[in-house]
Amino acid sequence: MKKTGNPKVRELSEEIERVVRVKLLNPQWIDGMKKHNYKGAQDMAHKAASVYGWDATSDVVDDWIFDELTKKHLLDKEMRAFYEQNNPWALEELARRFLEAEQHGLWKTDPQVLKDLKEQYLEIEGWIEEKMEDIEGEFQGGSVDIMTKTGVKEWADRSDFNIDDHLMTK
Image 1 (cartoon, one colour):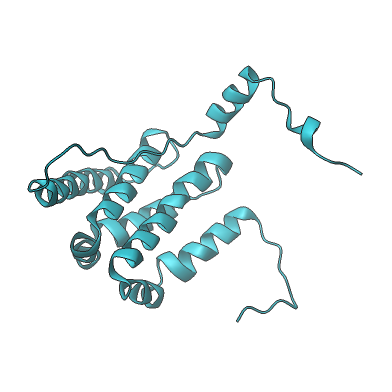
Image 2 (spheres, rainbow, N blue to C red; image 1 turned 180 degrees about the vertical axis):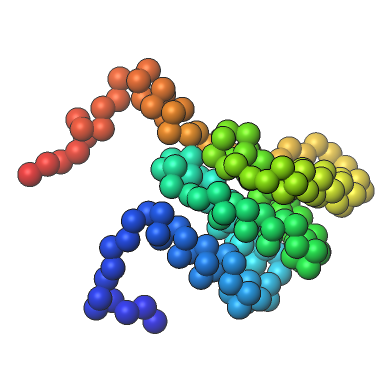
């Protein structure tokens, strides 16, 4: 039960770091999520991938956060085995998001970490292809486009929409 009597205001970067430490890098939280198999893998990957969205829109995520999430969720053999068995699609999505973060300049990492991530991504794609080879029909994966602050500003500059026209002020 959350304590509601003493709310705290934090900087976004502090809150992101807190969530990453308390949940995404916390072995106890991870073990609890693993009990939910497919859904647990999906939820962990989704929460970790949201770091990309936070950074793309606010530019407040430190590189060490991407580094540690990559090492824990994508490069750790035990975690990869869990994802492979329970939900390789969630892991593929996470790997793709982190590769996009690096490609968009949101994350600067050690070249070896990036090399290892790219190798793991190819391995994950192989897992998925193997799982899908007996299935007939057409399949298309999901895609979510995430824009950076620059992309949002460029879009806004081309748009006639002005948020201030829609806000109610006192």
